[in-house]
Length: 403
Image (cartoon, rainbow, N blue to C red; front, side, top):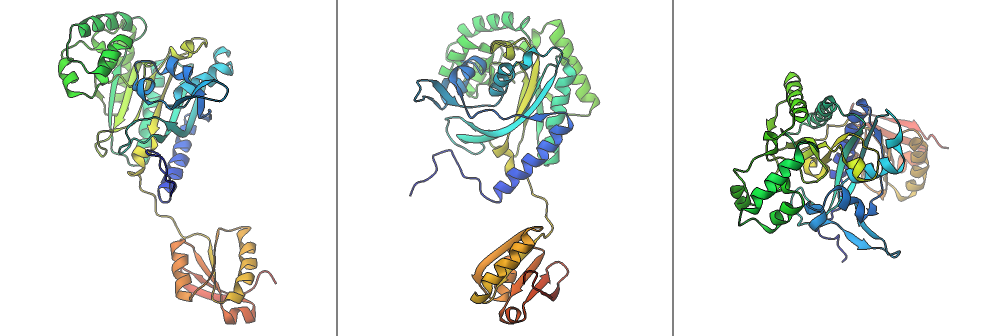
């Protein structure tokens, strides 16, 4: 028997129902904030992610599904959504539209080759938003508020963490100082030794307990912010306070990707295991320029859909539509004609098996149908349909609609 690859799972009901429920309602929420749908390819040039996500990230270093295609191109399955959206933004010359602001949302499959565990699959799904052209910190507040509204809608238990990662004025000198201090520390894990050379702030994202003990007393970027970054962060916290949005300032929060600057945030949930982040994002004002576009401020976030599906409860739905069943083999063809007539306007579940009335009523219950429609021996002779309203518990006979 051929099975699905490790870390790649089928999505069947009721999980598929939860997925559709999540997508529909999340889409409705982000549209209220002025976002429009964008879809980017699953397959991109590997260089896109190496230049944007960064060589220091685990994604580029260890996790990409990367290969050479038949044309000799170095390509990979997308490991995250932001880079592809920015590539599209630049390729379609939206960065050249003076004074224009663009807001996009997307959802779909992402791929990372890592050890599968709860909340972390090799093929997983994200819902993300990206906002281009707005440099003011008020957009940061709006983005966080929108993410909160989504999680609140689905009743997700969470805790918001925020931090500032500085800008191209205050970050370089801090990185140089941090790298010098890290070079004097022995015992760092191999990942942190690599991060020390490529992007030293990423060491704070290390989950190795020994590394955390070694870097515990190192200075954090929040203590080295320039005046502009400090003012923005104070405005951010002030507005979150005014909106009664609870948060924690986490100086270790650096996010897992190299392109972030200034505001970074994560929503984490105690209802999950070690992989407890349900949503996260931040500012990436330099990424458009990194990908050969015109310098454009930008901010966004993504939600890991698999991580929250188990925490979503579907609302109880009312019975809807019709269930059609036959009690005689000779009635099935006639039943099909009648069901086809109803299906033009209503949802119809049609059973092709001859069953007892009791069995058909159970089938109608399972399909959550409002009406159970039966043709038995007598109904076939009289050209009648027996119909029972399963909510009102009323039944009646009516003439065939198709004669």
